[in-house]
Length: 322
Image (cartoon, rainbow, N blue to C red):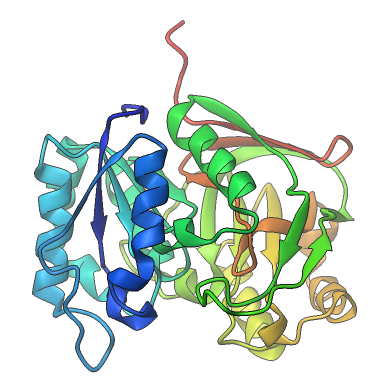
């Protein structure tokens, strides 16, 4: 897959929620300006603005936009507008053969988890869980987020490092108050591991269980996070279901849980204590991905090596030329 470079063309698509859910096009112009400042050209899919009672466009229109973005040779990368609730509706209708013939960087997070993992599962093409288009309008903590994204999409291998500070506030509201805390990645169980990265939003990944769209690498590392919508009781039952669907991970990495989930460190550790497998493999938590800010970018389908002693996560996104 071609790496991204300055001057490349990024298409913005809305496979879940439309831009209207977060204020409309004008309210998100800062994201466009930030990406153009980084040296990229932007365009928007035909049905990008459509907004029905589910805050999105009809299935056929979202499928058409996604397939058009992959098929267009002038487009170098695809960013989703934001997450949402329904991009798994697209999976039975997508032409995965077309996507496989036109591999390109595809990035988003949250509900986009369904597409990220399904595309990898059906085509073998790596995808990227990282900032959506709207994420780039965030001012505070944007430097870390942008740097982490650029490393992932411009380099064949990259290292994840902790952010200086983090926040669990409504960054997409320009006047929302922000409170930042020092970042500390934490260890539940130490060790080293390597495998293929899969995962993302816990409840969304669960939607793929039992379908042809669930990724099935032989050796996998689960990256798991959750949105503001579910509290810790719901997260616990989703995690149980996922560990039944994926019973032999090489390691598990948890993103920070947003404050709305009412997840505390004490509760999280009690949840993890329920699962014997998690005491036998490396398990890290409170990392910089998920629904807190800022977020790093990971490669779904990428080879990742984890070492809890040095707290290093190293991604290799494709084989070297040698």
